[in-house]
Image (cartoon, rainbow, N blue to C red; front, side):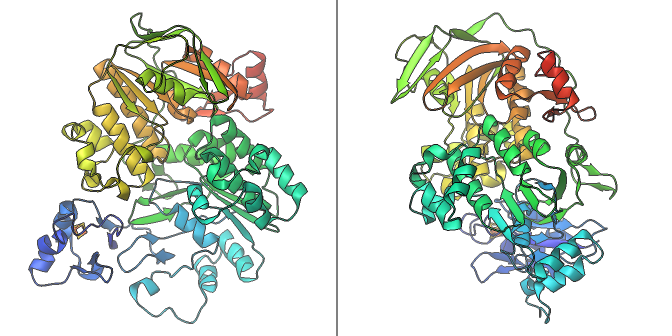
Length: 594
Ligand code: SF4
């Protein structure tokens, strides 16, 4: 069985581990061999060819979890498509787009999704592991090697088209928040850079609801607006026949997610292929015709499965086992219950409020009288710009209502929506998690151990989110307020966080209020639901908490979508517009399954 040894350079912190701990403790190094050395970049480097099983102890000793020693699946005989350096991440296959379809890519963070997309977009020249290992790369061009590598498959045809100049790719990158760092100007000026046709720009802007921000500076629009401007820029690029969208729904609320998904779906034509990387399972199911599952070990290697119809692929992903390849890529199956046991709603109230109102600039919102019962999870749904976060801040005491009162004489633990701005960059995670470190469940479920010695400024969005969730849940409080805990998390982390919040509230008999746009997460954790409606940034109104069925019916009706459970996996799915099921459920007023 082939084995690879990898050092994740962005995790390797030689000063943090007390000075190349791996070199000092490696059994191979102690016997005089240079298994671990200092690489040219000052980080540790591992010599894979002389790395033996004995080094598993070195892997465990690295406090940052930077070293991987992994046995590759037996069936994996081919060379990597790309390897980052002699001891870096290897990508073994590619999710090659099929024309006429939306091709989804599903997988955890660090498994190579963005790398694969960059190879397809020709933004990254694959090195087939050769250049990375310092070996001669031969005379052949990378594209010819790809053609040879994928001989006899759809991918061969795709790369022949690339070679013949018949593929023109347009890509919406993952990190839209980087755009204001490189572009100064209005949204319109940005769109003009890719398209000179004002009519076309206006039509796309209308479809994506960004007409009102076209003259606004890129550095002044919200995250959701920036995401839609970036999608518009990708779509307006002329003559593209392959569109790649890397995480197109981050920062978007549910209404926008559905709208953007429908818009992206319409791009796929017999001569046009669309690829989308997405972590929201309900959106992926709605958006994609077929899905490639990417699996392997995060930070070490990634493999792309063949495409499957979206429904089958998502169920296979949840099962963690690809039957045709006899490949188990996760030890446990992710399960949903057909009908979760209904919990009797507690009569004891934890927090109560009368009708309250608040004006913030020109935006006004009101909250109908309500209460949070003890020992429940209350989900909060609604479009962006309707006052959800302001309501959470009122509960936390951060802002006061203009009229009406909240009786909340309770201990509150609060995870805010914007996590970057709240912590100094040079603070260490270990100092932020003083309480959480004695909580084995939190540390394990949120995989926090390798992050402890890192500084806040060194954390990725997903890592910081996990740290902030842990810090919030570790507090001894009566009410836990979590504003958008799914942001930046991959699909498995979202499910893990959902289970964690649910279990902790049940076991400790506590109450949580959770705002999120991931419908699957809210559906999974909530006993009750608050719904925000209105005109974004103008006026908002909140009602509830309702019982789940009533709240979801109300909310889904406002979005004009219906939900059913998948008959095999029980996961929630949006019914196709105009389908028999949708018509039946709408006729019965049953937007949500009961
Ligand atoms: Fe230290 Fe781990 Fe980097 Fe080795 S790999 S130098 S143990 S941080």
